[in-house]
Length: 544
Ligand code: TRP
Image 1 (cartoon, rainbow, N blue to C red):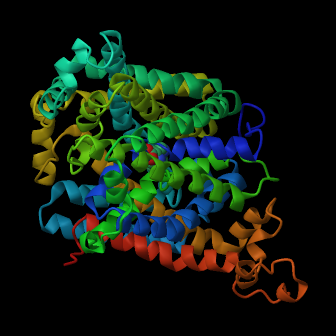
Image 2: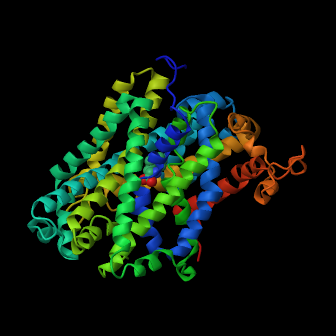
Image 3: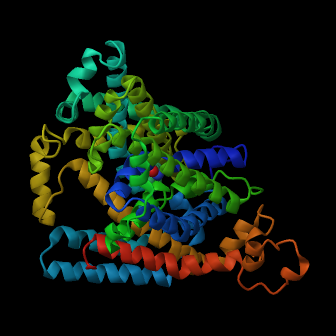
């Protein structure tokens, strides 16, 4: 199925691709999730583990995704279809195991789980590896549905901060009324999130922002907006860091964030670090396959991958530096968990001079980060309908943006005044309890859980297995070699020793090259590590 709308669009160059992919990677995961999770898991110690996960799993898997995309020039479903042999032994083996697990679950009368194993297990025999791509498109759909709700809250908070600013600056009535202390701030957030029209309107605004950009196209839409927003993001963050660090008492926050406390690190923290690395780098669902499919053959994939990963990590660290000093300087407690951003931070900002302005800049930052990530999620779904179904870009974005909005509305409607709950969706909850024996705290949690704990790790696992064992490391490497000056074939020891250009250190007998290390990682180490993390999240592997 070739592209029916002329030549496939391409990024204008390496920088365009790096900025767009970094825009996808840098999002709520970096600025909202990373600081509070690392705060809960031992600060600097967690940061070290996170960096190891990024290096050992994030980089190899991202390289896989981008290589698949550039080689096939397709969306995830088409990409797997183009590369996979029709009767893949490994696919059949996986399908067989899933059917077996499904039958096993039937015996235990877990109807919902049995169904979730049997259906995809049977589909594997029909669609083979294309199913992994399909899972990716589905994940894009599900993630964007709740991501857009949180993105909508961010937009709503930008307006809240603007109102505070307009109602008389720092001590303006709006601010003192709603964000003066922890309790009022919590009450404000709960009442806003439980307010159906507030949530829905903001959710709609966020979706409209994403649809508007994706509709315009890859280079003129996605790349152009990333070129504007990414520097803006860095700029806003730097202002906030300078402001935070200049507050008296901020050193405590830096210490909290960066001092390693290995005592608070558990096996679980390691697994959480891995899951977070996946989410934060936009891996596991073909977002990078899709973006990779717009990369030109002359571009260096190794270098671009390092650039994207480097920017993502840098922004996560900077976000921590922007948040914790301000939190500690105002004497607040950092152990706020997920509520850190919407509940704690507004009060923190209101206590420092010029608060509403800093709050405004912070939520703008968050909005910008979420926006470029939302765009990448929508692009995956769009690319599928353009490539495989022959739809026009305009129709694909409008129709599926609409569907995603509808699904997300359930997440937007789900929080009640207690911030969790199903009061408006009781029937749905009963159905879930009937099928699965339990229901998560809210519909938003359900969608987040489904995507982050199931679809993404499974997708990442299958993608690295696919490249390592089905497509093959050699063909994948041949793709990566285009435009890479044989970077992967440099002897690793010579490279580390700074002797890359020395002839006698570049013998034709390559042993420990970067490429070889990559191959070993995607064939063995990454799949194994992801598998362990996955078994742990679903509770089949207990540590402790
Ligand atoms: N990486 C983004 C973040 O950190 C979220 C995101 C965008 C994503 N696209 C994705 C996550 C694709 C997984 C897969 O917030």
